[in-house]
Length: 245
Image (cartoon, rainbow, N blue to C red; front, side, top):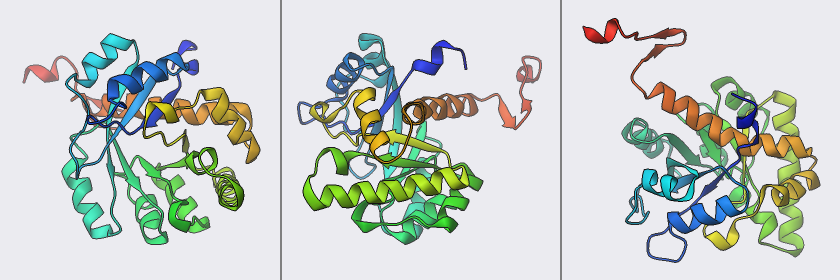
């Protein structure tokens, strides 16, 4: 990663073609707020739900990287495993929505998962076993700030407490992580500095929050490289001579 890449932040968003928050509108707003890329969370049960322009066309039009991803949402590990087999090779990033102890544990133990999303939603929990498994398998845990940004009162207090606990586990067991505002529309996007303020409220440093926003891009770059056709195994690639045969 070059020095310039260190300041490229990504946000993971949900785009809907039947509303004002199309992928193009999200890309435009994200760029205006200082992001260099967006990750489009597609629900496999609803299709890609982008708009008439392709991710590449949107990227060219707005000068921002657009990463295709799929977000698997199910409460059944068996169903999740089948979806992983179906979608892993088709998308740059594979995200698995958590929120129950069973799904959080499944995601953390599954190397095909790139990101465990919203593990503390629906009163979900993460313990030391899940944290260690995620660290061992390279599964990024998402800090979703939507419950802090868009709630108030006791609900917001509980959300902050949950995120503080998650931060402590992530730091203790050196778990890789990503950050997100959980935006479902362009109106819910928040600039990196605004997310940093939330992160600092749960004990993160400014740099730690910004690293979580950069990590989406690092994941995308890694997976694009792996899916490029020259990768065989760590340290082994197909060279130009090999491609002739």
